[in-house]
Image (cartoon, rainbow, N blue to C red; front, side):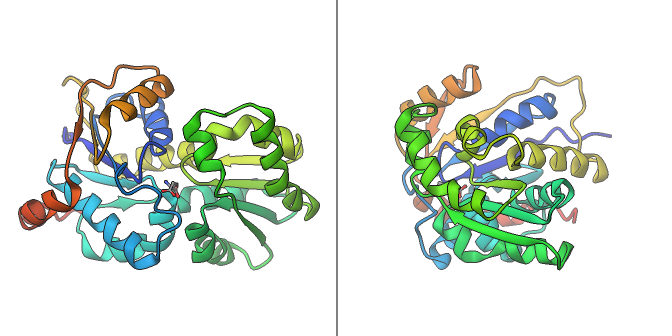
Length: 285
Ligand code: DGL
């Protein structure tokens, strides 16, 4: 018995499409409902309370679309608010921190792991806390890279300015002797080529998006929530502002037609649908 409901994915904007890209690769039979909060991006520079509130509203919106599982594709939300959000809702909410942490702990040989993310993610110390639980011998070297987000959004993925900024952020990590680097932000997989070039061949780069998709595949199978293969797959994309821009960049990035990208008023919608959405939460955890 399968479950044909879609998977819900949310992010502060376009960056979570890096996770969608990996879901397409690893779970091609699953339908996806994506919400990108393009009106309120960036989350990475907001206070923890605001990030929690936004995460809550984003999940409520997805619940209104009858999703079977939610992926908080945003590292800032995953770092700051995932545990609390999981206590509120009765369906699985998976974040992007845990999968990256596990893969990095497995990959490191010298126990020195770098983590790059937004200021919010780095301040939360979520990666340090989770890595410390795996091994007391692991040393974590965090680095906020706030300029990487606008560079990725601008499509400056491989030029001299991006390379210089990457050197400023990453040289100190290289000097610490890290052998593994976690890409702790939705946008950073887009800059993977330059990051790898700056760090050199001895540093393993952990792409959390791919690890997250693998975790989702395992969780769906464990919970018997995999989709029956005979129905047709349908993806839906929602944003809180400027849908045409999201569609343009998203289609370029995913290499596929996104169809209609619908604009919603996230604050307004939530006051109407929150109570209905909470009623349909399935007790599967
Ligand atoms: N999506 C955010 C993250 O992964 C990056 C962009 C933002 O600051 O909102 O942390």
